[in-house]
Amino acid sequence: MNQIIINLICLLLSFSNSMCSDMEGKGYIETVTNETTINGLKIQEHTIRSYYRKEGEFVQSPYLNAAIRFPQITDMEDVSVQRKINKGLKDAATQSLSWENADQTLEKFHDIVYNDKSTWFWYGENDYKILSVEDESIGIKYEGRSYFGDEDCMQFSDYITFSLTDGERVPFTEYFSREKVIRAIEELKYDWIKGEYIRRYKGRYERYEPEEVEKLVSTVRNLEDTADKEGRYFGTTYYFATDGEYAYIDLYFHYMDQYAVLKFDLDDLR
Image (cartoon, rainbow, N blue to C red):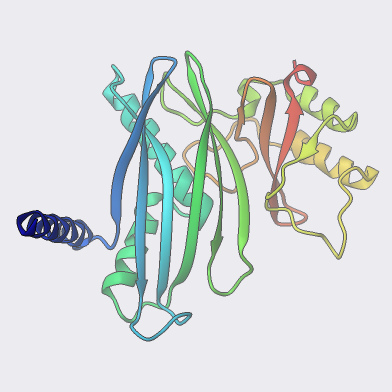
């Protein structure tokens, strides 16, 4: 029995040392779990975790508590496309939480953990759901919340589709006619997703008021002809995903400086 206890202690110490080693120089740990196969595509679940606060302090800067979850594809024949998709999936997860890509976000994690002069205060966690895996695309939903210390806690629901052919993010305009989306909005065949970025505007917000409907129509009608695929994930109004029954389109409203997701029945966009 004593030998068993000693072995368990050694195992725990080994695991602890491994975690410290993983954190060394990075400020975070990335773990891989739960590999699954969907329509022939192998997908792993990755989680980045980081926690830091000064001893004896609770809400003072610097503070960090992160749990970022995102899928990663394995065993694709085209390794370069797989690498591009996986970077996009990781960036989309961190941008949902921090508005910056993974490299920038993880650099800040390092600064918080290893630089006592950092003034960054950040809490964030998310989950994801794979909505669809088709012959040429994968659709993902990211959902979670983040808090930067000087703002209210932000809830989000983000939808994004990647091409399995070239690794690019796919805008909804490659799947649906813009005019059909506009017509569905004008006919009130849409709904708002709970937990989106839209907040109450000037004390109230009515989603189906004629004035608001016209603003939605104007937002879609005035989109540029091509999406900024090389730019930030945020700051666009193009990205979307489908689950076989509904389409979820991310929209940004300049007049409110807020994001939202519109939900449409797929039959209304065909």
